[in-house]
Length: 526
Image (spheres, rainbow, N blue to C red):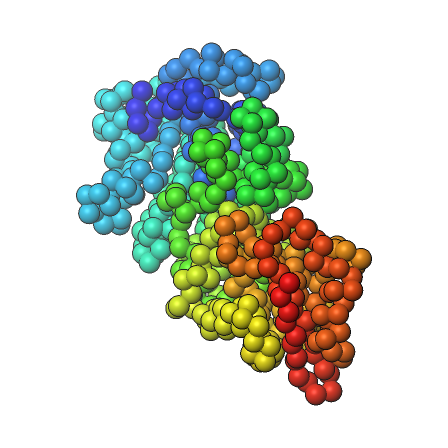
């Protein structure tokens, strides 16, 4: 057994000795592709969504140098018709590209030499088995000879295939050299049909585009935008999470609020596997996203601010769903032409969830929302900073009862780029209020149109646990008066919705007069 050639099954053996959610059904999908024109599969999904677990599972199943029957005996794939046909029947080339990059970084070596190092590493292990291959210079020729000598074709399993594209983002020559290596294996009429039984590549990004097409065009790609039949292997399904919560005695609703939110036509609820398992181990619901090597900083891309990107990010933070075009994205972290390209990258990184039918994006769950909220807190170098400052001042004015300052603050937001073009009804005013009180996201739970007493309260801000701030009920009026807004709160007994809340409640009535084009405000505390 080697590091790259036929690595054995020890990696998967370790995985199933811990708490393992059975994802072996994926093997049957790959088995169907072996020896067909669909034998090249590339699956992309965010970090910490189980990509490496799947790669080690496939190594254990296909590697001809080990016997993995007992490892799969109690798992889903064991009862599949294809199980015995392909179990431990192939030579395996397993490459974790991040491992090569880590070696180069630790030794302060230039990534331009990484492709040569990969070739040399594979060839060395081939020669360890068959020294007679020493005279064969080309790696592809060595692989063909090795396949002939063993009577078994290769299954290539490449984990984090796109790491070079991301890490060498400013080095086009290194990227091209790497893509040419992959082409020599998977788009080579003199090699691919002779030596490759199948290939499984996984990474964060889809295969980089060469113009308008994939740089390695023969791969069948299943991305986070549309994973097709691989949807339920993208992360944990709802049933799997329910079982885990029942087993550990954890609150399923909290698990769903924190880590669900990725939805596909063939899997309506997909959860972040790493975060779910960590929450179970730590017995705590919080953001574990930032505690990983989680990726390129969210602020790195927000700061680019293509075509008002930061404005759209703020809209996402307030809970809106935005339309996006994902077609022009070149599947790298450098070639952005528009804000849609940046938003598409954030989908692939897992920061946003994509609705393939509606072509819209949203923030998927509370865990990722926490990352966006942290962005708001540290927005000094972004266009968001001015709005955050205004919102913070507005909240302070509201809590101190400064009615004129609140009215002026809302007027300032109305005149900004965050207001709707047509400011002509109460719904437009509600839209402005979203942005006016955006700073509240950190310490309040905001509920719009909340059934309460004998009516529906426009906006209710409920303090989060341990927050010392009072609750707020905001009522909006159009062409009436701020006193009428406060009167409605009292008449319809809106504070009753907070009957289990023991602190103060700030009542805020806001009116907009269409003729004078002036906002007015009335504030009371109860």
